[in-house]
Image (cartoon, rainbow, N blue to C red; front, side):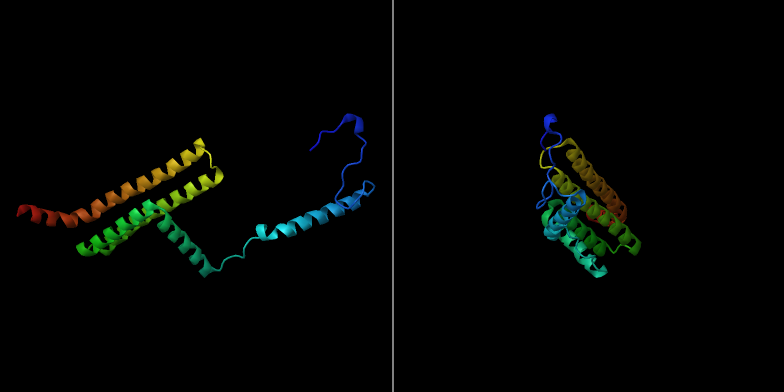
Length: 175
């Protein structure tokens, strides 16, 4: 915006396109509203909110998010593979239903933490491509949450699997 020259304070102000400096304030306001509406209409494909997803469609979006995390995040694949191994070990050791439930909660905690870590990294990268201390803090804290949940999952695995493995280990090392 140009600075106002004090010697030309009474100069006519620019008016919306198509109106001269003699247009009334009401005509200028109507023209400005029409111009704004035309700009909004032109930008509508970029500004429009998609229709609200149906209940079933939201599952498709959630599946896409899960698939994206599995496809793009190495650590998510590592955690997922560990989860498959933990479940297979549970089947082999014939752990109880309650023990399976506890293992499932531990697995879900790690996978959910990893997905929130992915979200945090994506949002920090979206906010700034440059190094920023707060972006680093956000990413580090999210990664720390994943680490903490993974440590808790290992502790839970020890409590669940060790009582089943202990007799087998004693049997193997006695011979």
